[in-house]
Length: 346
Image 1 (cartoon, one colour):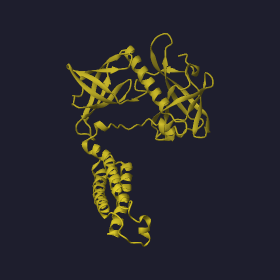
Image 2: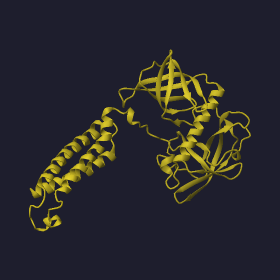
Image 3: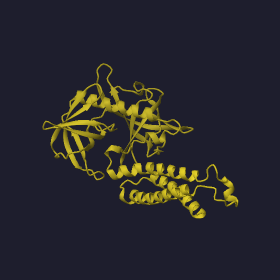
Image 4: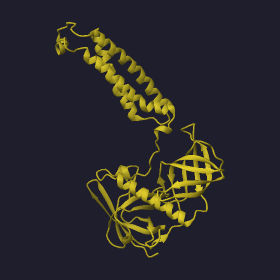
């Protein structure tokens, strides 16, 4: 196919397919930084797990892109062989220059450009409608979550809204098994069957545009490395178990109690007291001990709740949250300060 780099655009999404150190094929997504000529291209250095992927000058790889035909509304996936000829770094921005060493050819596989997508999609089987919360989407199929178990090796119709129209995609259920992290739903994986060329073109167009929008919106040129990592984790508060929800909101409730605790603690030494002089030897009881007692009671409750919540988060929660543990630690320290002052003064 007579396709060159000049037909790409700055900001276009491309995919690098390279043989990794473990001799397995690795796919990396990045975007075009500059177009030098029809055979030379500059890309932002691809990222994997928040770090620049270790590419060396002379490394060969397959460059994958999506081509839109100029006269018809049709998209194809194209691939050509390239090699890295230069690497540059300007501050936090790393780029690679590549040279085309082969001709672009149409790629028959349809699972390139997998789109991480959290979206409610309707699935129709035997005149019954089910809602799928998708996890990712490709030209080959879909993966997501559903509330009812469907039989494998059966077929259904997926109604996918691609903004310009609703595609009716014939889908074969490959697998529908219990979600190990959530007892109330199932993981479902489906493969598109006998998809029409027009449907595939619309689907690739949708996937390509959504991925391009996602990267362009999120890219931060001061620290873009962590943004281009495509190994995104699925997180949805309303799909969590009650235990997970409780763990997520527990620090907020404890911070409210901590605020109330320190309101009483500060009011202990207000107005008619001798203020800071109390701590320098003038031991007159010109303060409000009832406020300090209330603050101490709240501190003890917070210590007990933090201990319990820490145990639940670390030993009962399947996905332990370190940031929540840090909040528990800060709240424990603040509560201990109140308890120590109370024990010292009473």
